[in-house]
Length: 426
Image (cartoon, rainbow, N blue to C red; front, side):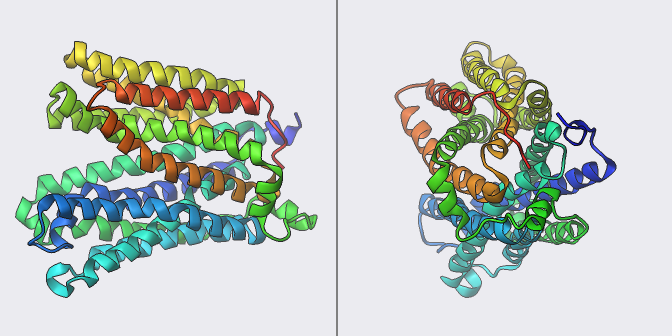
């Protein structure tokens, strides 16, 4: 290992990592805040004479549309990121998220403009989805190409922790809004506050990212005239199908950890184990906080022991801790918060997934390879997992446990297929 590869993080590396993680947190906050106010949006943006269940279904349909837009947005930004530079797309993704979020907070409702209100909301949500489809893989590539190769695990883990922080911020802001104003006030105007704040802070993130430099890896590719020609995605699919498949398997595990353990468990715990809503919310916040810590801890471990080894061990721990969470909630519900915190930390293994994907694809097509594998897999598994768990759990109380376990097996097989190797990253 060369001195450049083994050197410690410089002040510039830490600054880049901090700004990238901050921008990622704000962008993910913008993307996720919608779901915390879905009930309000359902009342305001759809016909008041429609059944409540239908309005909620339509609101969640618009929320889900953001996930469907992720692959296309990610591929377009990745194409130009591999051809023209990482930094340009890194700034565009946060701008493309901030503006629609701000506009959502200013949108007229059904009472003002009728059918145009949900249609405009859908357009803005699609733009948000396109933005996050480019932001997540772009951010992983950006930070990994700035730091020494021996610190990629820490960099990707910290960046993933920043994205997760956005989920926690959304939950805390939503709780604060609902605690400060009455239900009628929230419905009348206060629901707009988190969207406007998200848009303003997103624009601030755009301004801060102006001070980031292009990655040294991309600059070296440009200097050597080694940039990819033609369509980067064509090169990915022609020569790196195995890496695409293994990256999709790892993304499946990532999706199960986030969607089932972090996002679905509070509702499932209330329905299955009669956990009080307030207690479930507090436990979820604690689990999300431990997830942030876990992403960084697992990232550090990946630097020391290799991403494949850590992914295998982490997948086993994630499956076991999910079983402990659900079986423990049935046997001893008074320990629910403790078991949820343990499971939240175990989900931190998702912070190693980007490290493995960064190592899987060579620099000229790295952005496109990760964007394609991650966004397509997330769109499929993120869309199907809630439906599978919700349908299966009617007949099998441990459906969530089995779903996570199957995804962890896929993650173990994908990590084993990649091997313990760490290819050159520049």
